[in-house]
Amino acid sequence: MRLSRVEFISMNNPIRRWIQKRIEFQLLNRFLEKHNMNLTGSAILDAGCGSGYSTKLIGSRYNPRELTAFDIMPEQIELAKKRYKKARFFVGDVTEIDSPSDKYDAVFVFGILHHIPEWRKALREIYRVLMPKGVLLIEEVNRSGVDFVEKYLRFSHPKESRFDWPQFAEELKTVGFDIIEDSKIILNIFHAYLCKKHIVNSR
Image 1 (cartoon, rainbow, N blue to C red):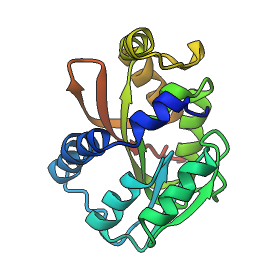
Image 2: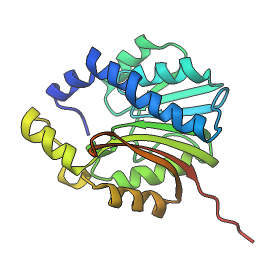
Image 3: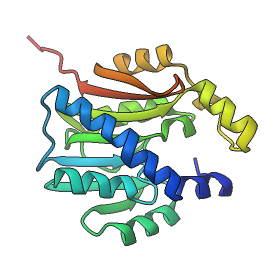
Image 4: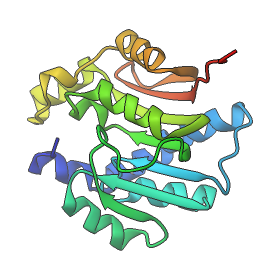
């Protein structure tokens, strides 16, 4: 789903970047450190990268051997290409990711699934492109948060894209993720997760 003009502006401003760098990204890093997971030199995907600020944070922190990022909005990708030169950017859809299966050591997702009616399909695609035992680091907003911003900030989101946390966690498990760590970010409307791609023993 494309952002409205109001939300596009709100996602591309210094306040949003400060929150992403100082709160969301730091929390995800603490998850990794707590569980002794090191992404340095790995292959990483930034799904729904927006204007590329999250991609720059990822690249600067982990020095990945391969960093790929995409967004559904071409204008965001144009901004991202100017912001960070060390990643491969493309216009793409998280429900149909243009990448081979089992490719990435890690996938980062910063608050895009609540825009997507087929968010369950997006989780399945993310699972597909992760390597066995690859990690998903995700920040999201729940139904209550979406309802709030839609009422007071005039944002617009599809009704089908809204979920509560038990529903979201259950879907992660259904897709095949083990939830390693999760934590609220602001009250209980913003949440962060560290998940690992579960591998079923075939024997």
